[in-house]
Image (cartoon, helix red, strand yellow):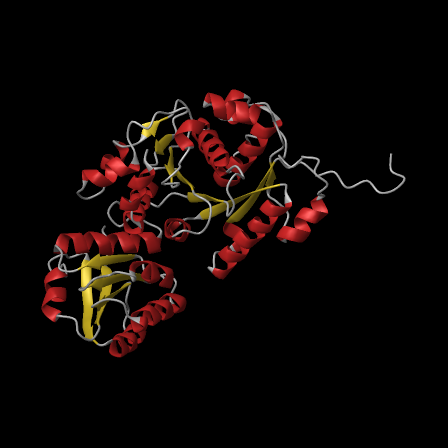
Length: 396
C-alpha cells in the first residue's frame, strides 16, 4: 500500500498564493495537504501542533528567515522532509537551502505532477524507502579525500569491483565532473556520460539512467564523468540528488568517487549518503588534510560511526609511525592498503587489483573494506598492516 504523505505548506510574505495553489497536487490521494499557512511564524507554530511528514516552504527568493526555519525544523525533527518552492530567481540561494537541510527546491510555476514527484522523492530520501516502489534504499558510499592524489579513484574502483564480484549490483558515479578517471581505472570507454544524461532532458527513472551506464566485466556499472571540463557546469546538485535516489532504489550499492575538497556537489553527495570512506596517504600533508576532512564531516553533523578511514601506501618507510598517524588524525585507520607496484600497473591496464592480483595484500585490504559494507568474509587476512615503529638508539 502506498504511504500517505502529510504535507504542510508555509507561504512566506510576497508569494502569489495562486501560483502555489496551482502547483500543489490536490488530486493525488497519496499526498494529504494538512494545511496551507500564511507566514513563516504561523507555519512554525502549526508544524509544532500538527502531525506532518513533509514541510513545504514557499518564498520569492533568498531569505534568511526561510533558512532559519529549515535549519530549525530539520534540527528538531531529523525525519522531516523539506521542499522549497521559489517563485523568483533562486540565484545564490540554492546551495544555502541544501546546506540548511532541505531535500529539494522547485522553481514555480511548474506542473503539479513534477511537484508530486519531488515530494515523494524527498520523503523517500528521509524515510529510507522509495515511496514509488516501497523498496528500501540501498547503501550509498561516498569516497572522499580533501587532498588530490590520495587514491580515491583507485579505492572507488576496487571497492565497486570487489562488491560486484561478490554478486552485488553496483553502480559507480564519477563525481569528478571535470577530470574524472573512473573509466580509465576500469578500462572503460566514455561512450555515454552524465552530461549526455542531463542533455537528454525529461524526468529521470532507473531505466533511463541504466541506458547511460557503462558496464565493467565484473558486472559493476559506471555513470561516467563528462569528457570535457566545460560540460561540468550543466550538472546541478538537484540533478545529482535525483540520480542518487533512483540508483539507490535499483542497486545493491552505489559508490560515489569525488573530486578533492568540499564542493557543493560533494556536500550534496555526503548529505545523500549512508556512509563515507575518507582516503588518506602516509605523508604529513595528506594526514593533515585527512584530519581537516574528518573535522569538516563532524561540523556537518555526519555520524562518526558511518565513516571509514582508509590509509593508502600504509607500509611506506617515510619515518611516520602508527602512533604518529593516530596522533595527527585522532583515530586508528579502519583499513591500511600497503604499497604495491601492481597497483599503478593495474591502473594503467584498467584492471583493479582485486581482479588482476586477487591474492595480493593490497587486494585483500580493498576486499576487507568491501566486507565492512556487505558483511562478507572475502579477505583471508584482516587487512591491517601495522606501521613500523621508529627505531630508537641502540636498536638493531
